[in-house]
Length: 277
Image (cartoon, rainbow, N blue to C red):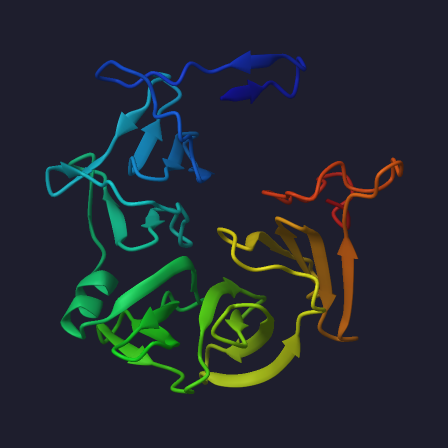
């Protein structure tokens, strides 16, 4: 665990010490999120959710219902900055109790006997949550949690539905990754309009992305012109919906202008040149 000071250029080692003694699990973290106050939230592969306040510089493991949350987690945030999304559970920070509570979306899913496929979930501009859900059949369909009605609505019911992940687009756009066969050997990129729930368009991946690894698309960014950029375990993919043109960037031995490695976990805009990463 390291922290890099942008002004001094100094790299500082952060000791992964827990607030009640002991060290952070060796398995490390799946993901990080920093809130507006500078606290760091960490999702782990089996240790639950941990908070790293900069004032104490120690990890605090957050319980839920008085117990630690032990399932693998992915940390994300809604526009208000306080939602934690997990691979199996969806929980929300209870700031008063310094713990986690079940999100109303999870409660509504339990009532319907629905299990969420939490690789990623996306929130639309109105605050509704879109995600892949497992029903009694083997397919994973697209669902929406209506926060006003407090109920889960099934959006798709195609027997070929195998929703792998969802990503927010520009405005009311929602991008969905759908596996096109049961072996997850190929994928399709589908655009939905969250206002109507209608499918707008579908595009085949170029056949270069591989399946069978955790979170094939680890990070997702959208340029102002609508172009999509995806960091994967097999390089960076870019897609322009207007021209339907794909680009694939990967490591090429001996080529210093290529990626240093194909495993890409994060994409960040260059503040000085927003068109670059």
